Length: 345
Ligand SMILES: Nc1ncnc2c1ncn2[C@@H]1O[C@H](COP(=O)(O)OP(=O)(O)OP(=O)(O)O)[C@@H](O)[C@H]1O
Ligand SMILES: [Mg+2]
Image 1 (cartoon, protein in one colour):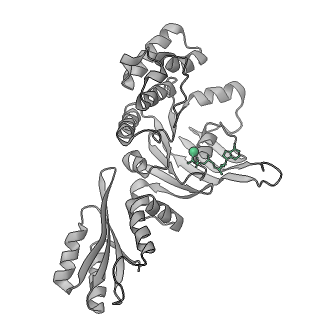
Image 2 (image 1 turned 60 degrees about the vertical axis):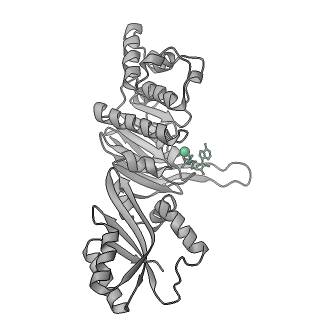
């Protein structure tokens, strides 16, 4: 549905001593028809710029953008406007017109597309029902909660039946409960309309909850791309890994670990192992097995089970104590059970 081929966006230097900014640097990716695709990364990584290149709110300095197989990079005027109608977009701060009612806001893109008045009315009604706001049609944005405002923005973005919905930090200004409701709505719309959704966020929880696949960005580059479960359970790129650790609970563990030098007294020459297990293999049961089999004692320093689109992903940091040969056997046993084991200290 969307293909970016070697897209770069370079902003010219600002001021006399400024340097040019490579906001997006040779980024290539594909968003498949009907999928929910995430783009994650720290602030300033280039996520917004990348997504604005999709609907040409920003023109790439180089590279090509294909929508539904068609190169749109060179479009201008009426053709560009028609292409943009096929791509809806929502933002962190909703960007509603304060002087217009809810229905007035949703009607606007239909008016721009010169849809006749009767048709517009019927369409607005249907859209507001779809986002659960039929009873607030006459309200003004200032009379709505953040979650309701985002629903209006979603209805407006869907007015011209786009094939793609771009969401730039759409839930970043909302509390966790409202965030979940909006994500649920996006999931529903993705399923019922078959619309492809691109979600840009720095919130890991959003990606874990709704995305099929995701790309991670750093300094304008895409460092890694894959299914969300693979990214979280087995990141290949060291910077991807650092980013995911920092943005999850395990980041807090490493921080304390670094600050205190060690969480456990390691003067006895023992080591700390980090275990990652997927599916149903339970980490703690494994620890009791290695005690029974090899007399290796495991002191658990950190444990967490994350759910990614409903699939468990467990992490355990343990200090293993026992005869060194038995520890080797225990680690082999752990690995034979399909659990990833790495010595971290
Ligand atoms: N119009 C512009 N002119 C010059 N530099 C820009 C412009 N827009 C963005 N940048 C720079 O490009 C880089 C990427 O910015 P961008 O907004 O795409 O990051 P982001 O990943 O969306 O960040 P955030 O998570 O904070 O929204 C930043 O260094 C930013 O300062
Ligand atoms: Mg941004």
